[in-house]
Length: 267
Image 1 (spheres, rainbow, N blue to C red):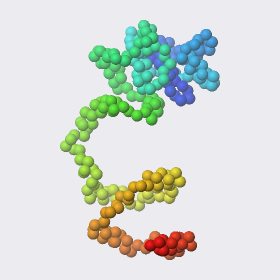
Image 2 (image 1 turned 180 degrees about the vertical axis):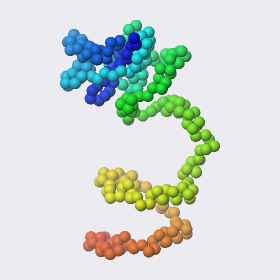
Image 3 (image 1 turned 60 degrees about the horizontal axis):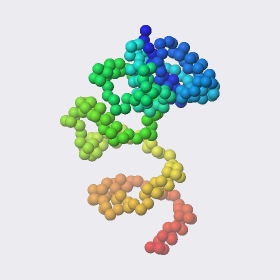
Image 4 (image 1 turned 45 degrees about the vertical axis):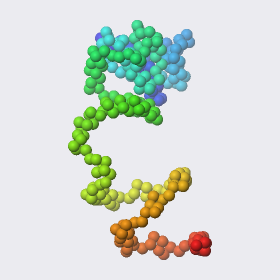
């Protein structure tokens, strides 16, 4: 017989709030959690949380995490509690797991032995989180900036793999990537032909216009003081030929005429 490590989660948000173990069926353990919470004498962080859900007419969801050997359930319960806390879940467990584990026990500052590390690696090898679990983990990380130390650890964990996939000799320099050659420019141009711009027909909101205006105030134009080269002038001239003015045939309104007249008088 194997011990089950399971989780209890909020039925509305899907957030995992409790990690436990049982040798009975999950249905039986789920019933026990709900039944014992109905007794007024039971007071704990977990029972108060379950009671708050029951008051809304719902019950917590139970989900199997994994089966573990009976002789190792203490270790795995501690492992999963520590893991979910590290992922940011607000667990209601009053201890760090295991019957013999003291209430103030913590893995902070402790290190797994090499044998334990191998067991952890072998137990997780080939396993994939469900889409629901991935979404829960993703939602918990939204809006949380990574510390420089965390970023460095991520780079160390993936840097070698990335270098194996992309050897130095096959990488393009930033200058090569930034300055596309003529063939690349032609491909980009061909892919865009016949396709309308993504913002065609979409007028920016008043808020967006205000933001754009504020961002430009006090800043000189990017081309101020830069005279176009002869080649650029020639291109502009050729592009303008055979094209009618955008306002050809559109008479100016009285208000616009007054503005133009006033501007000329000032000059």
